[in-house]
Image (cartoon, rainbow, N blue to C red; front, side, top):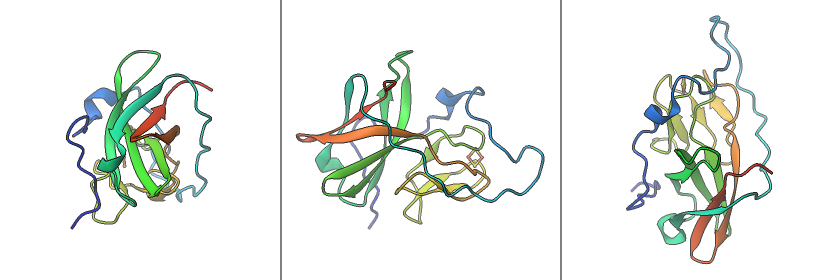
Length: 157
Ligand code: FES
């Protein structure tokens, strides 16, 4: 049995086309080996519109999922990774890999987030890179449980 939530709608199969070449470019371009940075990003304060991304019942405890939300600045859909840490806590991250911008997914045999482009692994608990070539943590989004839904905030604090 898998712990990956399978939302009926809003599931993102692959967001790489949306990510484009202007996505984050980080390290490893010169062939040097760099250890992953275990420092996670800070969780921002909720700002802007609360966007409902998934019914809470679609994300059991310890499950991971990928959903889409709207960038408030551009209106474009962007991938968001979710992790239900416990009954009352859901964490949200950008799905753009900090290595070269591919789509990170919750589809992994190791209960983590995985980037198939070059094999980076990222922690659902804090977004930090646990295996390279990515060395930086995934950017975080404010996220909360509101009633029966999971909402994220993509606005600037
Ligand atoms: S883009 Fe290289 S590991 Fe994700």
